[in-house]
Length: 156
Image 1: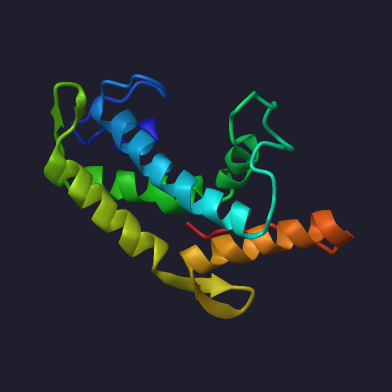
Image 2: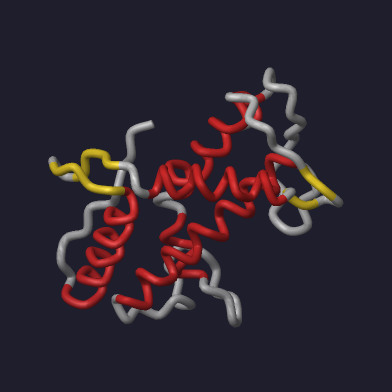
């Protein structure tokens, strides 16, 4: 990501999860929190345990299975939007170390557009939010019955 935005006048050294004070990490963190909520809903809808992870180390009280699934969608749903906003020189700002309200509104609007955008999935045009639900269903089917699971592979 640093390479993609290095010429866009925004300082970004490395990924900061908790307590980020820079613009890019704050945008990513806010966007990921929205995506976490969507994936968590899909997991609960399929009656899967959000704390029983496969990739991430289990942590008491943490939805590590949600963390596993978000890896399939993080770049497409959030990173892509943040990079686009920065490269388009959209009016993005921090106030007191947090995203200002106009920046949050712009990010949420762009994330919603991205999540509701259609793309090819298994030969059919689907919204990204539907692809998330299809993937969680396929994971649940794999867990329940050993049905074949084919992960979502996005085109950039």
